[in-house]
Image (cartoon, rainbow, N blue to C red; front, side, top):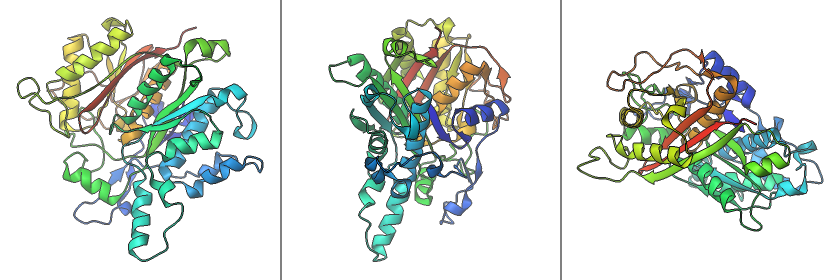
Length: 420
């Protein structure tokens, strides 16, 4: 796995930030040009140069089209995250070349909520100002860019494609990868690089979420806190290298974790059982999310008592956090698992948020700790779930991860630490 996040680039940097309870929020007020919809804070990525991570040898001419200067930041982040993940998985040799011809049988599935908005805004302004339109404009902002950039850089032969289920996008991409690997069709991929990316810290995007009462006016997510008032905007990318367990063991790989179950559904409006549902908020009764939690555990043949940690979507919006808390209580009763809510560290990076939180979850499993909640002051009494402000030691092996997006998309993934 590999991540480019506001709390660090790569697993080691992210792990250290989670252990030390260091969040990635910064002052990003200079990104806003509107007095009516000002940005204050957000989880941005700074001191990042993609050229430091990539290799462009003269005989790999196919890489010329994906040099960082030709890419939107969403694609830059995605490519570096994929390189870090492929490197850890043992797929790469010198100069980022594939270590075996077999590794070329890889597909790429990326989730994104808002495609290339930084480039689109800039390029459209150039057009309106009468400037020449760049011939690279469409590849900069097209929705499929990040998946195609990754496939081009590594010269993969499997199909690159993109999914969009709003803020559940990267979790949906992981589930699609599981489906593809389980199908195991002739000529199908042996590996799937799956994840998500987002780089949408612009004034207009923030104004849109402020108008929808989803974005925190301060720009900071305070998951499950009594004073929560919306999510904090963020950017980043995360990628997992997924393969069938038998294939991984056959090539001598050392897996980090094993996916055991998943579920994805749509929160449907029902005036009797789900009166809180609308296009931008989930079923606040928690009942529909509870169905997905149970379904993922049932597929994984995982009893409730085996779930050590719930890795929350935890946006810090009033209705999302209430929905998750009620769903947990319906499924687990008074024996709730520990809860981690990583948007307090990472902010909400839309299509990248779930995969970055899964990376954080796997780091915590492998390191035997539970990340704290750096933005927590007081848990909302109406929520009543176990949360710790500081990181603490906790040996655990199974996590349950939720993601929900505008439009009613929801997804749940159950995974456990790999044990040989």
